[in-house]
Image (tube, rainbow over all chains, first blue to last red; front, top):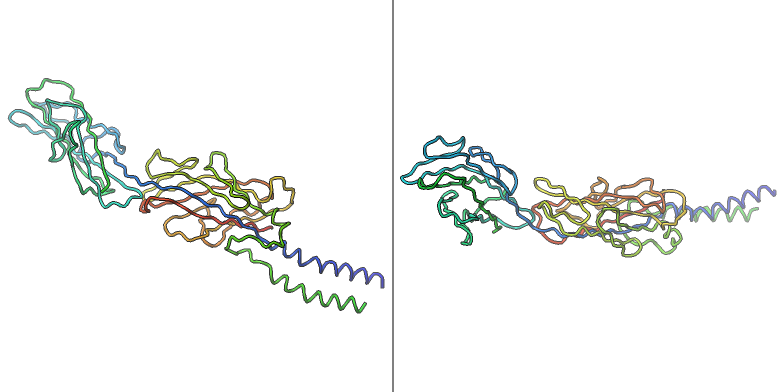
Length: 180
Length: 180
């Protein structure tokens, strides 16, 4: 009889405890991590070597060098450099690619300008059909409807007068792409 | 003896509804747990922490934290504070690490818990990942044997398409702890 009582007391205690144990095991707690950030809009410009143009040093970046090589009125131009002879000057040219990509900006197309950075009173610089201005004049507009994400072919022309002495010609052209 | 059996019979009836009220571990809402579970509340409290070299996490009290990724863009060199940016063709991802502690730091509570994460609101533009698990509004396990009181590090990654307009990013991640 005594054993039975003990058995039932233990059983009773177990039954009383059971609800709270069940509650603790199924209980979940929760928290919230709020993530904040600011996404900035951007566009970027890169130069690339064109299939028909001379190899650019720094192709695929926004700082590239185009080297025409040794050019003259009387010698065959280097590979992928075209040359035309005029009455008082000759012009060398080669194509190169410009790609402008956008990110997180609402813009249908872009405007591209270019400008020679150092005064050059002897030679003439031109891209496509547009003679380039020299700082501090306003930059030359190359397009106002540039298409994002594509390699757009441009051609650089350098016209050298016959009267110019043999020398190294070097200059910088600054390109600016602006989202429309 | 009959009285004891009668009491046992009555308790047997009352135990069943308690089992039936166990909360599901697949609950979605990040609500505070009921007050009757306050002793377990502290054991299962969630603290969000700044991980070494991770973006800063500001604690807003128990169970609440704000992770600030700062400003970032698709452009190289504009990396957010404490976050890494991976650039893809049509999107970019920003990732950082944060710490998570279940229970107080001086906790001696034995056992482990399962930690799940979920988004508190749908987001059609961005995707949010924690430890490689792409989050949705359904809780998904990010840790199965998390010890109470210890700090676990987790990796947060948010993928932003470049077509998304610039501006503020705000994502709320719910974290749910279920005792094992």
